[in-house]
Image (cartoon, rainbow, N blue to C red; front, side, top):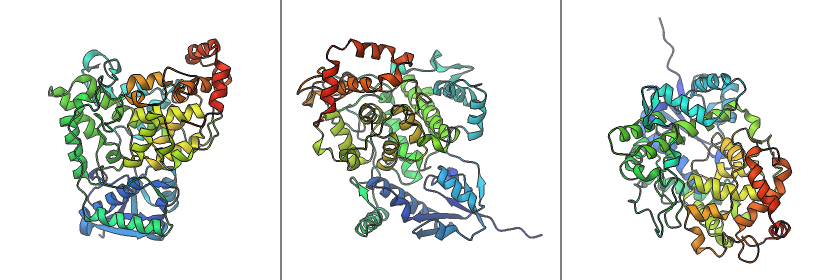
Length: 492
């Protein structure tokens, strides 16, 4: 009796950790065209290439490594390949058209089948993240005491989301652990220089030193560091912003998770273990578990459940303005609003910003000014080191821009300067006043909030959660003047 040789497993760039390796032969493909489709943050391109090449070095004789222009050059004509179901519609079409053996997806706390069963059981009710997250906790036992949640409540947000300490320039935590670059990173940087000089790619932003893990060992070290030095402060300050502290108490693990370097189930279990050992408070622990086992899994599953057309077929607020050059080029030099300039500058330096900067600074600004949601979605994919096709649609099209009309979020996440003033120290050094909506010192976010409500009022009139803001708009004595001012604003 003869046995067929084992299939070679082609691993994509989101599948580079031990979770995706079952011990057989491996193939990795570095396709340059992937980096040239649209402008990309240089730190993102560097991280992906570094992770691919580091994985190849780890695998040694077990790997065949291809450097090609397009994937087809490495895989067409082969009948010995298998894949763990990849993480985008385009990649899934590619492997199925070529008849590859497709294994179920990995890298999330819940499976696609579990989510679909839950969603189908809703009987037409909204797919609320809170309900999904509660079900995950019940099935997995995460932060559970019998059939009840630890602490008696499923959601401890009330105990989190504090403003930053008064007068603090930083939270005062130790600097995060950073990986050390090596000769692989040096060669990556040289190749990116050459590709850009040849016109094959267009890269935006800074590159170096590399701040995010490129190997599973580095990712584990970064996780250890978060557990040791920042988990305890994560919950209270997860929504806070400080001009001089770009990392705050955040884990910085999203790039490693999205590269497949960490198993998210292992991550949340280790975080929960810190609470059970008495080394982390429950609000911080629950807040982090919610981000990974709740929101991250939720947006992954919505990407598939809502369909490929979700990203491009929704524009409920008729937002059609192109992204400004300051966004496209990550050029903060012309931006006077301190919160926006610091966030864009931080993106230029690191290819990263934490979730409140993304939602309540970048997203809030884009929402107020009617930027094309598809262009904004793609910009988030391309300019963040953790940006992937699956992670952004529910976050940007749905939650941030309300372009889907309420499928993901029940109301737009719009806010004036008062929110940013409360949750940051940006406004103290800004030339604009968050309390002023008219005149030279008028905050672009404060005035922009009312101009936004004026523009979208006809489309949101039936949304009961917008009744109070729209009533406030109708009482605004200077409404016409504010709208006219924002229509002609050229300094922001």
